[in-house]
Amino acid sequence: MNPMSILRFVPVLALALSFAAPVAAQQPVRAEVIVVLAKEEAGTIDPALADISALQRAPFNAFQSMTILDRKREQLRPEVDRDVRLPNGRTLRIRLQRVMPDGRYRVQVSINRPDADAYLPLLQVVTAPGDPFFVAGQAHDGGTLVIGIRVGQAS
Image (cartoon, rainbow, N blue to C red; front, side, top):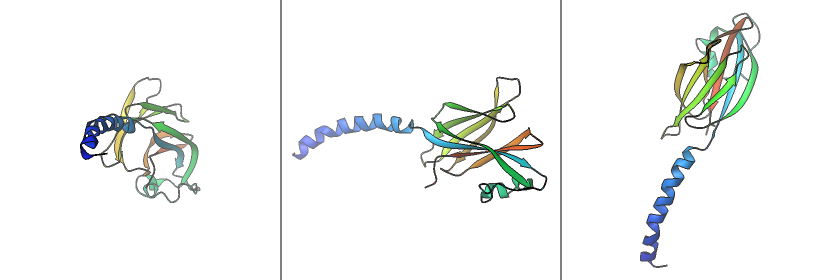
């Protein structure tokens, strides 16, 4: 093949790549939601949580016992809500807002109010793949629900 015939294929290749990029951005991103019952009373920390550094810092280090109540795997797509039912009857809504150019994820998390359809924005974070973030504050069974969310995988 001579160089001139190769140049004829460059616009076709550029056009094909322009369509491929948005498709790649729409691929589902794996996420894990961990629902933990945390209590200030002395007790045990689930071994799966013992080495997570975020739970060893304030405000989570005030809890003396942590039990995993539920663990769910979800598939997130940009700008599509995923709802996860919580043990206290509320619903956690996760929205992958976008995949950042550096590979991190912008995520919005909200929890509905009891007896209301409206979801209030609770937290918006930019997180690295596989790096969990936590929200807490929902009362349940004599303790507090701590919800961990891990988006993507660590490299």
